[in-house]
Every structure is written in structure tokens, then in C-alpha cells.
Amino acid sequence: MSFVRRAATVLAAATALTVGLALPALAHVTVQPGTAEQGSFTKVAFRVPNERDDASTTKIEVSFPADHPLAFVSVKPVPGWDVKVTEGKLPAPVTTEYGELEEAVTKVVWSGGKIEPGQFQEFEVSMGQLPTDTDSLMFPTKQTYSGGEVVDWSEAPKADGTEAEHPAPLLKLVPAAGEGAASASPSTAASTAGAAATPSVAPVAAASSSDGTARLLGGAGLVAGVAGVVIGFLGLRRRPTS
Image (cartoon, rainbow, N blue to C red; front, side, top):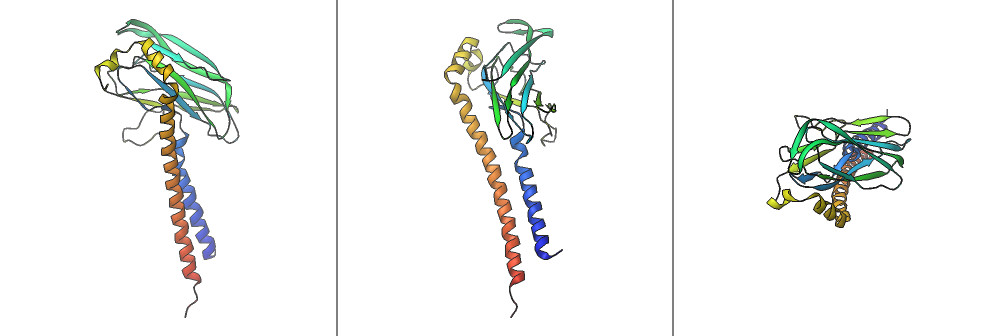
């Protein structure tokens, strides 16, 4: 193999590695925003990207935590999609400030629509009251493709801090900024979510997009750097000797 071919092979490998490092973080099903205050009512969006080039996403099934049930869950209609909210009886009643909770939402399923290759969709949910005795809520999610494939996003975060191959959407819970946050009523939360529907989701999308853009630009910079080294070395090899 000639030197030029070897250089091209190295450059191609570096490009593939860089793209592989940059893209996985953009492809997972996530919950946006990724944080909320303990004891509050909040609105989140389950962001679902389509990862396949030859199939569309046709169904999303989100499971809600049974160990920290939520008393109030409502969904925002998504044009072209049907939604089914399933409630189930809890193993044991849970006492909340709104009374004893014997049933809670266990699953929300969106179906009937399509997320085409290269596209993503957000499914918004208003929910509360968020628990105060945990620092995160996990929402295992199943993503079904038009070809019949089902991707199970249900893995918990690893103890060593590395990302799982198919991580479940995770909502991190932080202490409330003020005492008033925990005392908000469902009606107040719903009206607030309605009045601020766009601002509460759009800035998060921008932040996530910026993070993804930064990763891609960083990867592109690395590829360009490798290319520069290879081209420079080729120039030295071709320079005539005196």
C-alpha cells in the first residue's frame, strides 16, 4: 500500500471515530428540561429522535415511576398522534398533601404518527407533585419503528458515571429555590404551563442544540486537524531534495 493510501486510511478512520464520539449523545430519547425542582409541578417534553435511515418511529411508550407515583399527569395533544394514558393501582396507598393516592399513571403511549429519518418529535407532559425524597426520576421508554424493531431505553445510569448504551430518560430533581415552589397547586401549575408553553421548552431546545452543535463542531475541528497533519506530512514527503 502506498503512503498516500495509508494516509487516506488514517484520515478516514479518524473521521469515523470523531463522528462516532459526537453523534451518540444526540441520538438518545431524553426528557427536556433535564432538571426540575423537588415538590413542584412542572412541564417536560420527551424528545424522541429517529435513529434509523430506513424506518420511521411509529410508537412511543413511556413508563412512569411506580416507586414515586405522580398524582397529576396530563398530556398535550400532538397533531397526527393518538395518546393513551394508563392508570394502575399502587402496591400500597401513598399519602400526599392532596390526600391518599391509591392509583397513579403508570404509562403513556403515543401512536399513529410518524417520525421520519433525520427528524425528531417532542411529546409534552405536565406532571406533579414531584417527590422530595429522591434526586431523580427515571422514565423507561420503548421506541417502535415501522419495520417492527423496538428499542428499549431503560438502562439506569452506571455507578462509574459512564453513559449506558440505552439510557432511560432521566429527570434530575434539585431542592426548591423557595418555600413557595412546593406549595403550588395543580391548577396554578397548569395555567402557568399554558401561559409559558413556548418559553418553558424552547430555551431548553436551544441549549440542547447548542450542546450538540458544539460537539459536532469540536469533532469537525479534530477531523480538520488530522487532515492538516496528513496533508502537511504528504507535502514534506513530496518536497524535492537538494
